Length: 247
Ligand SMILES: C[S@@+](CC[C@H](N)C(=O)[O-])C[C@H]1O[C@@H](n2cnc3c(N)ncnc32)[C@H](O)[C@@H]1O
Image 1: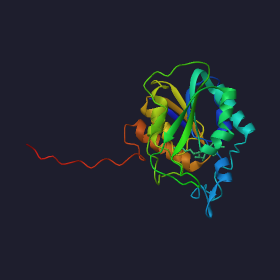
Image 2 (image 1 turned 30 degrees about the horizontal axis):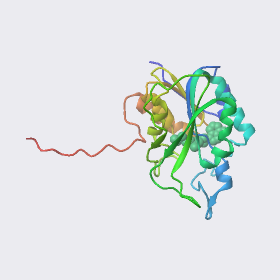
Image 3 (image 1 turned 60 degrees about the horizontal axis):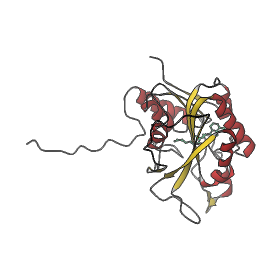
Image 4 (image 1 turned 180 degrees about the horizontal axis):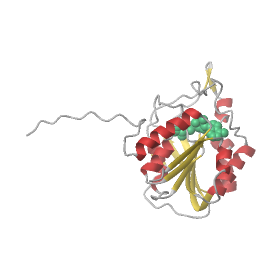
């Protein structure tokens, strides 16, 4: 059986440039925004103090998320999406205001979803507990379900194997009304591969990329396990069995 996923070690624009027009049904992505890091630092460290790449230099310098770069990225997403494809782009509160509005220049924005991370994070003023996900379409296609709310309470990953690792459940919810088995899901900023795992679990094919070799290796490891029907290596540990005495 052919492998249902492909993850490239590549810059997002180079990766998207390698895809044919209209070959993607759903994009679910969590880009590497530099804006939040540049504008907000806490104490002696940056807001994301644990982040560094293999050379121990700063992360995310590769993707300069100024409006020109971001709109070029969105246009490439639009090109690879088929007519009627759906796109979900995650934004922190800083990038939502500085870049989120650009989604409207390229796509038909349908809603902004609030991800309630349940547990409190850091924050100078109000402590952060949410992120946002802009949902938009290329052309017109309805969600396949009408029972999905626009606030999602999903516990964030605490001390994950990968910095910024998101819960698979978040991507499950993005795909719930947008993906049918056999469709192709894409994430040009795949990180630990949570979006890829959700795509495979939904019976979809997956195409993704990340600039980091660690991210690509981790995504491959998770996809190999899940595609073979084994548990996600970064998934929650199995619950202890509760012993019930035989009657
Ligand atoms: C916010 S993280 C994604 C986290 C992911 N959603 C997860 O659950 O693990 C953003 C990712 O973008 C990658 N990245 C940074 N610049 C990039 C670029 N120019 N092209 C592709 N990936 C890039 C980083 O290496 C990082 O893994």
